[in-house]
Length: 101
Length: 527
Image (cartoon, rainbow over all chains, first blue to last red; front, side, top):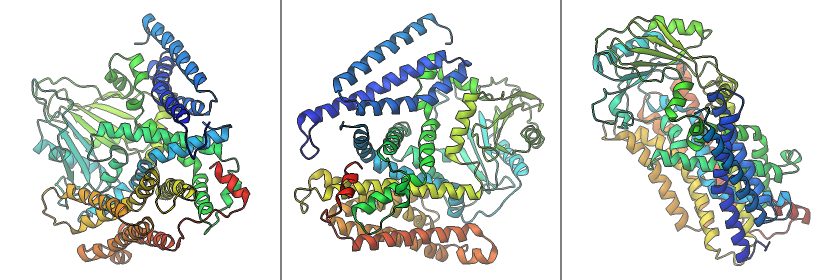
């Protein structure tokens, strides 16, 4: 990475790209994970919903930190898009099968 | 974004901290003040002295509502408590056919009243009191509440990440706790930031996370969305007594509320009733819902009991809370601190002050660290000027605004139109003026003058108070009116603190050349 004194365009682009991954994409991933937890935690419906919602902030914060720590920006996107697609698919399946709602 | 875990986390800490630091500073200041919101309100309504009986005042409030609002959809009554001398009531007017009934957001002033122990409206100056500072903490002002809460939530999330990354950055966390080196420029700012951060770290972590939890269903509604077709279905399942009741159209009088409050107290092992809701008063289907006072236990989600309004029979009581619900209740309770007695309340207050200094010193540290590296210190680049001037306007300007809010409460004419609004406007006028001043003046002079102004305004509060109302710190000492004694002392301590800061700012030499030992420099590079 370039030095802070004169941020090279590449460095700025990398920061912008990780901000995108760490805020909007992270929010989407966290929302999906929260919804999945709310549906499948082995608790009553209301309890599972609350437990999932309470945990969501920790999930978001840890993913954001991991995104800024990772060495490769490409890997960040690969992981984020991959896990969002995977969990999103599982959530869609869970909603299709019905149950709690 | 930097090599190494600690370096990357230091980078993250710096930038998340800076981006929302100003908003976080304002949230810390007003949130800290809000731990004494009831006391501030009492100070801002010096006319009110009554400390009536809770049950009798509740019954009197119902009599008042029965006389003035017999057709209302709902009455809500907050009985007086040890910290509030009045009963506060508000009501929802009867639904009109063809009109969206639930989202009516008229001005609270039109549908609320403050009552004394006999159910008579209290004649006191029009003011929002400490309630405004409490609401600003998460609703801000002049912008729609819904958006304000998102903004505040983003700030809290950045704060959470700044705390986590700050802990990781800080390997010598305990050693540094005992190191506060004064008068060493940048090193002192870093020490101040570290000491205030470590001093109450568990508090900041708790307060930030639980703060997010208070508005969790707005920030992260997807758990509810995945399980319920309507959000209301979730809330009705979790909070009994919330469901709407159908009007029968048959008139029937209400039973007295005092015996019901006694039943509730016995069920809650003596804990007081914190709020009363009467749904469909005067109708044969009316219900009375009593909710436990939040001062009775840490959990803020007080148990509630629903009675029939016409027979007094128990209809429904909240089921015992499950683990997750109890956790959420305790988290929100810990954040608001309503359960806290005086000792713990002051500890909350001091921790809040610590947080204010932590955020403030972090903001200053950003400029101090970069000043030495500026290519041309006499003409810093735009970003640097922006941050340094915003720091002045926030750190000195907001306290000056709050002192003005207290002064305006004493100085604005009592019969003034929209008086309570103008108290609030005066806060923002002074705050805005400080920003303009900070931009217009050389940076160092701006610091000195704004801090001195804030200190002077706080020092003026006890004086103006003594000149305008009969209660003050000295009469309070003689008559045991400790609220006014404590308020005067608090104002003077704030004045001295800000005056001290102004003096330090005046003596500080700007742009110290970096001449510290290499060890310190290396440590700073990661901060």
